[in-house]
Amino acid sequence: MRVLFLDFDGVLTKVAAEGERVVLFEWLPLLAALLVPWPDVRIVVHSTWRYDHTDEELRKLLGPLAARFIGAVPRGPRAEAIRWFLYSNAAITDYLVVDDSCAEFPEDFSGPLVVCDPLFGISDARVRAAIAAWLAGGTR
Image (cartoon, rainbow, N blue to C red; front, side, top):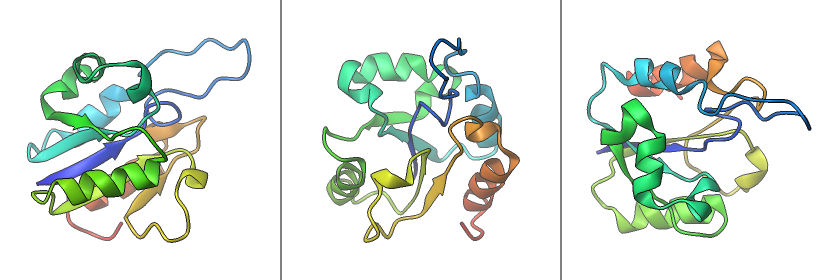
């Protein structure tokens, strides 16, 4: 099973300046379109939204990607929570982490990581190209 570990803020939604209005999940359609040819890819949420929302609420927030959602990582630092999820799910054969904060991932985190600019998230062509390369089995 291939898994995309997904953050929300700064990845699917622009991180706004104080007082700035944003459209929640504005870039979700871009990710949904990117994943269309890859029905085998599942989604695991590692966003802090996992603290305030149930799995069912997270699934609904993912809209067109809801059927791909298989869960959220447990509470705790993101890198450690992702490692735990991987350790607990031997069926995962490949994965990619998409986040807007490299500070969440210490130097010893050896997993494939795509870091987004929080102002552009996956609307950035570079980020979409990195995800597409992983999807196609190319370099990350």
